[in-house]
Length: 140
Ligand code: HEM
Image 1 (cartoon, protein in one colour):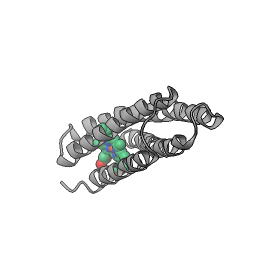
Image 2 (cartoon, rainbow, N blue to C red):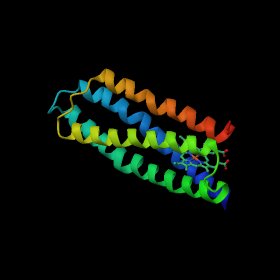
Image 3 (tube, protein in one colour):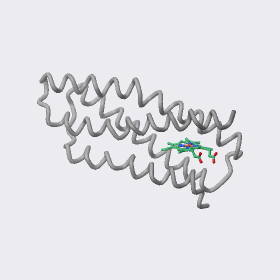
């Protein structure tokens, strides 16, 4: 059973990461679209559907199954596990922040630049490198 749950955990992780890498990229382009334009309206729909349909449910499944794996096989022990949970908490914070940006775009009150979204786009990728090394190599 453990291996099946881990398989679903990894599927959820892939979906969450795909969305977390794509959402700020959409915002880079959304910044260029004039307020009230048809392009801006399309980006609003894409951002809302990506957040509500994929990123939010994928994060919940990742967390629930990850915590189950951590409890059932490791009793929440291990430096690598604590490091991983810390990095996933930061990732979840960025998730929450991006959800706020989706709302700001929806209400036509975004003030951040395309460069800002380009930079924030890199953070989930860097966190993902650390998380995968911690859980697979378990260096400490
Ligand atoms: C707080 C949420 C999370 C917890 C508590 C958690 C915990 C765990 C645990 C305990 C395992 C099993 C490790 C093993 O059997 O050796 C696991 C597997 C895995 N997790 Fe997570 N995880 C979380 C979120 C994530 C995230 C966000 C990612 C990637 C960005 C991720 C990537 C993976 C991968 C790739 C595996 C498979 C590792 C293997 O088979 O050796 N996890 N996770």
